[in-house]
Figure 1 (cartoon, rainbow, N blue to C red):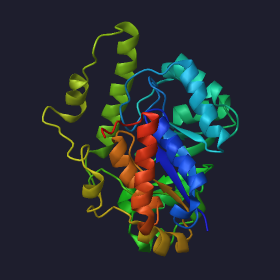
Figure 2 (cartoon, rainbow, N blue to C red; figure 1 turned 90 degrees about the vertical axis):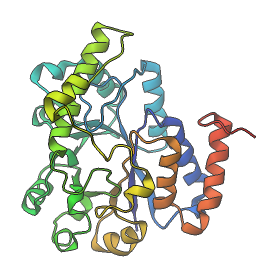
Figure 3 (cartoon, helix red, strand yellow; figure 1 turned 135 degrees about the vertical axis):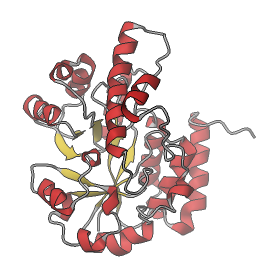
Amino acid sequence: MRVRFHLPEFAKHYRFNMLFASMMKNCPEYFREGVEIASVYGVFPPSLWNGGRTQGGRCDKEFIKNVIRSFNNEGIPLRFTFTNPVLEKQHLDDPFCNMVMSLANNGLNEAIVVSPLLEDYIRKNYPKYKITSSTCKRLNEPELLEAELERDYHIVVVDYDLNNKFDILEKLPNKDKCEILVNACCLPNCPRRSLHYQSIGEQQIAYCEHIRRYPGVPFNPTSIIEKTLGKDFHCPSMDKTFFELREQSTNVSPDAIWEKYVPMGFSQFKIEGRTSGTLNLMEIYLYYMIKPECRDEARFRLLDNMSRSGVITINE
């Protein structure tokens, strides 16, 4: 049995994810049967090709090389969230994104895509990369998803609105290519999800252009959000805690993974949390990957290691 988890954010949560991977190696008795780290996904800011969540900040080349080396030496691929849906031809030559792709071009790492333009560019210029079809494509009709699964993708992330619809999931072909997003924060059947992804893509491009032209000046995305989504837009899902998300109809519980999804033939599971705080993310990992009877001990070990390594500060 293989139960493969794709974990969030190799840059922002670099040290935490490395600590968690170390615990998996050193304390395998804590973990549920078959758990593996299939990849850690995200981007190195400022990545113009990024989508799904706007990512600010800057990473220098030495940090990028160190992160790639650290995860890859453990056999863990990095999977780049290059899911900006509004890219144009001139964006393909972005120096930073191409530098990152070149540094990680070793046959282990992967890319998640939405834009056909960028997908063709990566397949042509970086053929060693495995390609994932993103949930941002919003393929929430069974026939659209089935067609996507027949295409040349390493993995296809299933739209979360199909979670727990077992009459549909059971009939899907190539279940080994399906990735289930287990803890989606978006509202079920959100009518503005695609527009929100478009706005995020526009924000990402504007942010990258802003810091190039006006380094040190704060970036304000308000006008872009208002243009795409309206002045009164507020996403109620962005600040939900792990415990609130468990109440949504699209949430997939650990028991369901092992008792329903894995017996049906699914083995790939994505944990959302690119913008989560470290403690919130820790609770998500413990919930999904650690045996219930081992969670307290695993939590203590993680917190102790996080404190010793400076990931968090705990006052004694």
